[in-house]
Amino acid sequence: MKVTGISREKGHTVKVIFENGENIVLDLDFCTQKCIHEGDDITPKEIKDYLSESDYIRAKSRALWLLDRYEYTERRLFEKLKAAGFSASPSAKALARLKELGLIDDSALSLRYAEECARRGISKREAYAKLYQKGFSGETVKKAIDGTLFDERSQIKELLERKYKSKLSAGETEKVYSALIRKGFSYGAVRDMLKEYSHELELNGED
Image (cartoon, rainbow, N blue to C red; front, top):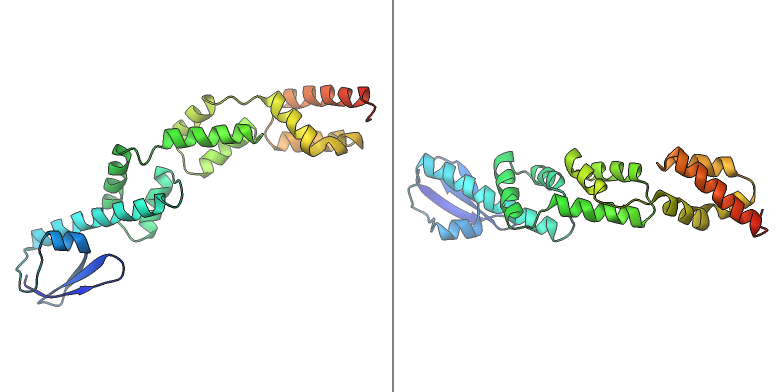
């Protein structure tokens, strides 16, 4: 089909208009690289190939723009590209290339999140849920959690000191127990640490 017009569109794109009234939107740099001008004859197969390559370039550019602003999992990034109007094929191809370049690494990212959860006193069970919510696969979450040290006793003791000391001193042990269980800590660890910490309070005359 003969090209009858080329016009700039929003973003980094151009609209290529054909003599039959149809048009396609291509990446500006790609259009320049292919030297597409008014009067050119482009076959249907070339149009299909151009659209496929241009969509891949645009999807990759959009993914890089998103990653520059936030650390996304591969799944969440794919969803973002789909929401932006890109089809599955160019989105998947763009993400595959970014994985090759090391710009998307769910294993490393999930491990950082898991370690952050452990540092913040978040239980292993709650950390599982948080990582799932971020879009990591089940296998990736398990590897990250298994590769992170969650010291329940230390986590519980830190929470008792920082958040629940006054409640324990006021005799609200059952409320503290329930709160810690809801946070995902094991029954045995919560029970033992409450006994140990309450005993410390008694020895210090804070009962």
